[in-house]
Image 1 (tube, one colour):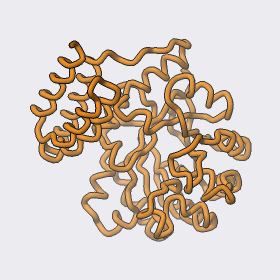
Image 2 (cartoon, one colour):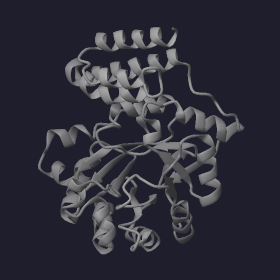
Image 3 (cartoon, rainbow, N blue to C red):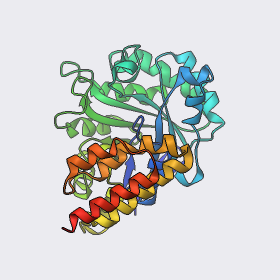
Length: 325
């Protein structure tokens, strides 16, 4: 298997897990790593929240050695806070610090962060410079194709990030106004790759091994990553790795195995967050694992009222029994 390097960080050239706020927590990341995700990233962490000592922000920075190579992703729009946040993050010893310039949600965009930075590339460059000046590891940037269809500026934006000191960039080739709808335009990733000398991570519409291989071939990117395709399907990373290595398409696991992984995932969340909070947070994952099973709509509704691990295990038993009728 081939590898890429970002700064001094070696990463297997298979498929990475993209950051997902309020989804890709420690338990989620660990499950994906066990199935072969080659590179992980924290949920988004507010630079300003870190500077003000927010316990929640600090908790998001905790890194387990089993997750490495691993990035902590920061978001914000003020260079002075970004620099201070990087100093705080250094003590968690991430392999990489990533700056989010792609998030499209209003609460991040309205103050000028996330994908709003596509409209202010000079400020974006200052954020990168501030981060690089304090970081004890490589700094990377994730961004979109542009703000809207009339301002596709990923190429010059990527060049500016490289000039500001970024060690790699990740490109999601949709605009902010597209959010996560419509087909992503991989030609944007290719154009950025041709314009910069640093590694480029491609993201968007990767559902399995064939898609990953196609993105590598069509864009020349150094690494591919996915996010939503892993919802309820952490084994997608094993499927991609096998396809890239051998051309073999691994089937989806049988229902019994899916349910086993679902329960294991929930148990891992409970281990880290306690049963009450953990099961509440596991509900969305349960709904994803049950997608496509017989009676899925009913079971997804029931997943919203789970309160204990025993509730989940009983639900899994019912799903399995119903499937055998």
